[in-house]
Length: 257
Length: 259
Image (cartoon, rainbow over all chains, first blue to last red):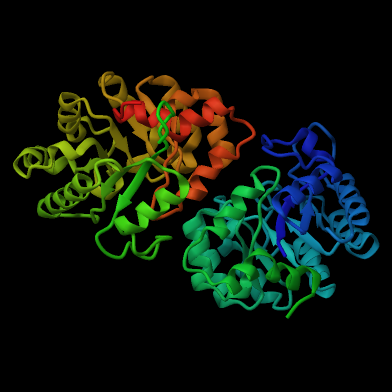
């Protein structure tokens, strides 16, 4: 089973700040795209907000993600996206998503939303909520200091029961991300946007259940991101299957060994 | 290659005589491995450079040049040799091409500013290399990335000062793809090679610079030819004609392969 651990969906795609190379603008389009690539299930969350449709708190997007999860319960698992800059209402939005809507993960992007992950009361409250409900948190990783993997060291130490996915395997800071996935039981990496050699390194250096396939749909083609895993030489069928789906199945759905 | 069809060319690969190291996808980056990957992906020719270590000596450059020259001579119908040269040794390495009998196996050269510790816009360092390239009519493949010596915009003064030399910026500038595209827009003699960049960036480069100036490379052994080529062949942003150019037509023209 192939599971995509990193997909952006919802109404903000109509005003996305980046060009989209494939169509995930509606639930039907997204599922068609998943079918085309042979993806059975996916973790979906809102894209970054930047003008156009007015949804800076992601409240509208989260409702849409909830509807997508309701409409395709066997295919899609929704993650709540929140902007901690809005303070207590951001915590309330996260709580609404996880407790009322039944979304089962949280997505944070400290680069786009410009906040510090570590040592912020609002972020701590969101992480505490996610940890208590056994919901993994997917954190965008990039080049900005506040979004580098090491910026999360404090968080993964203080919240040992919180499972944290370092998106894009840390981007240019992949060695840091891979080291954290190897060093901390609660840290995972996803392969979206990572170079093939980085994926090879992650599989070799981190425990095999810590690496998750992700595509970053609709900014990249799922077939291309899948080829990165499928064409990787020297990887056993068992490990490949884990990366392509079994690891995400266990982390997000609590299924499998 | 079918008669009349555009050849399928991998515009960027490196041959390692031994283990390619931790960063490689294919640790045993042998000629046999590369040939089998080319076969599987329908690649007619690969532009191949020899690996040379950081701070390599003149003798290491000469040995690498001679060794790859022999490989290309054995597989003339599959490889196009790309000479790798540090500016400090340029005159001697070019003289060796004739002395060692491998001149005919090479048709381009590759420079790596970060590896060989010079700045790309240092005309005093790079000028003599370009003099040789211009005399031979060879394109110059330039390693590019976000590392300061390699940054794509540093090619601007050289590309303007040497309008008759064709330059190929590798990895589409890597994470400085906007700068690489700008450099190409400002200098008609600058081409872009796609390895290690993303499908959306490749599509953007083709839209802005044209398919006639973008070529697909694999960066073997650090990535897989099949994966790198899929970014082009699966792209909904590119027409069939554009894919044809990027997957081989542009490189055939730049590297002097008759179609």
